[in-house]
Amino acid sequence: MKIMGFAAAFCAVFCAWQASAYDSSLKSAPKPTVSAEAFGKTSSGEEAKIYTLKNAGGMVVRAMDFGATVTEISVPDKNGVFENVVLSLPDLKSYEGNSNYFGPVVGRFGNRLGDAKIVLDGREYKLNANENDNILHGGAKGFNKVVWKSEAVSDRDVKGVDFAGVKFSRVSPDGEMGFPGNLSVEILYTLNNLNEFAIEYRAVSDKTTVCNLTLHPYFNLAGAGNGDVLTQYIQIPASTYTEVDSELIPTGKILNVENTPFDFRKIRPLGSKIRDFSNPQLKIAKGYDHNFNLDKPVDALGLAVRLYNAKNCRMLEILSQEPALQFYSCQGFDGSLILANGKPAQKYGAFVLEPQHAPDNPNQNFFPSSVLKVGETYSTKTIYRFKVVSPEKVFGLERLMPPAEPQTPAPASW
Image 1: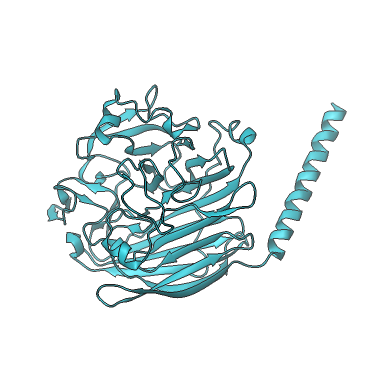
Image 2 (image 1 turned 45 degrees about the vertical axis):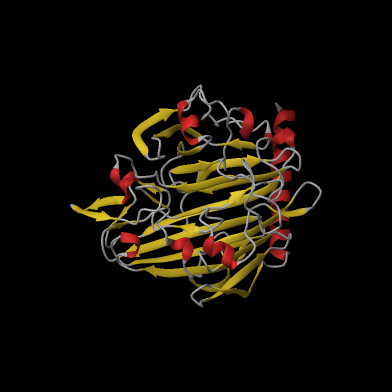
């Protein structure tokens, strides 16, 4: 007992010393930086800018004001080699003309609304149908197709961690794509020295409306365009998912993942069950394009998904306050689209992971709702945390998840 007590005490002291040393090195490291440069003009003549965030370890995040679009997230592998792990397009013209949502914020309602309509306060609003008779990601000219106001920010968060970032803002006018209300939106992107890229969303409206915002990046931890992701690992802490019909609109049924290809509660390769078309839901989507209902408490900042590449040891953990995660496995690409680095966007070439509220929830009996009323504030946070982790540690994680964190106030820059 004495030996165990001494060992425990020694471990506590040693860990405290390590944490103190780490905190000290973090505080003494150079602060993250932000810079901006021109990124061309839109077809209507609007000037676009692109911002570069860089931390002391060399991680880079680039985002432009057209669509608040993330065009680059460069992170190291086990050998210290940096690669961009998000798929991106060559130039502004490509982003204007493309409909695959490469890295923008989508809204005013991310995901699908059946029959392109919503009913609010007893009134039906007909929306801009851009996918069959439905509306996807806010319509033909959603938040991804406009130039946002933008400004660089640098500050320190409530935990004393320095960050650099960019704040995007716009007012989506009453009637835009059919949605009611003038919706004032602010989105803050930040990068710190912990290799955490964070996004905080806020919105208010002068009429009852809907608001469901999310980022739409394509992740490949081998590097953008470097093969498919079928051998990369994924973990989603969700016991249920949302059944969809032939147009990928929720049927209203919530299905259990147990003993199905939709069970990602234990980390496993994406390709292990993706072609199991005996499952009717996989057959409908020809892969994954489904909403997973996260097991964490509503509004808690907890794990939404974990990705891992065992070859280069890159890991991505996405933590979010959102209650659900839309996962798309990129079965729609065929190699004909060429990315910014000259490589093709190929089938199963990336993971699309969108923390959000459930699709079509204003029209169905899903909770929580994306309805935003006058006097209410839409507020949510998502963190993209990058690490280099050995396989021995990863495959011991299984169902382990980072603890949910309480919601913290926005940084002083807001």
